[in-house]
Length: 305
Ligand SMILES: Nc1ncnc2c1ncn2[C@@H]1O[C@H](COP(=O)(O)OP(=O)(O)OP(=O)(O)O)[C@@H](O)[C@H]1O
Ligand SMILES: [Mg+2]
Image 1: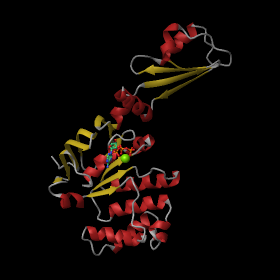
Image 2 (image 1 turned 30 degrees about the horizontal axis):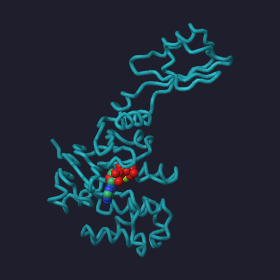
Image 3 (image 1 turned 60 degrees about the horizontal axis):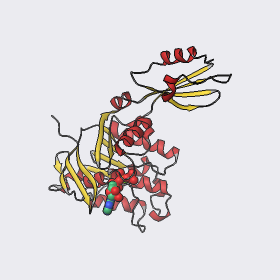
């Protein structure tokens, strides 16, 4: 068996009385594109900070490419690039200086070619000599990504890299991260944009209240969707919904009715038959399968109960 890119065992982290992580077990294989999702305060950044050695776990173990983050920090850190959620920089550095400085941290003294290439790929060449504090938020985020990659790490962890980033830059960051993945990097991405996880990730973990509540391939997760939403519209006012269908109503207006269908229990055809039998004059129907967003909302709200 090949060494997992990331291996986390029984990870606990308390901040005083706050239990931010309550026993996380997670293995991410080399070459995976892994999505870590979860609501605000779930523990995503705490997990990432523990991986990066920025926060010391209360108990448990973390390994990057087989190297223990606590007992063999330098070897682990060398293989990991982290794009943090918060933008913190020394404001007196220029973009290039920040990258060269970061290279020095990994003992890379002749890294100019790679730094130039990163600047070019992330469209920062124009800003190479600009002071960090003069950059826009989106540019700072690109510098954070460049900084995470100065030492060509095998495993790249991005903590909400596209938060507050405009649509165009978000798309270009997606392409960039996809190209990193294609070239063999293992990617771990946290995001609040479920569309992003749906598009990019092979496997998804959902963390909530410090626990991993779901760990599945995207296909598995999507296929256990809650079902479908059926919308029927009419040009004439709709009659009363039959009693047996009333609990499925999501929305009802004079000319339109939305019903939620459960997977493997309700069939669109049966429901339409029942509506027609109740004198529904149906002029248009729409069927929408639940998105990852619907599934996520359901899973995390179940947990909150
Ligand atoms: N340095 C800290 N000191 C005290 N509590 C902390 C600290 N860092 C995180 N926490 C707490 O730990 C919990 C998890 O926070 P964390 O930042 O990991 O969440 P998150 O999933 O990254 O959320 P978000 O989506 O908002 O970024 C929260 O209750 C938070 O208040
Ligand atoms: Mg966070």
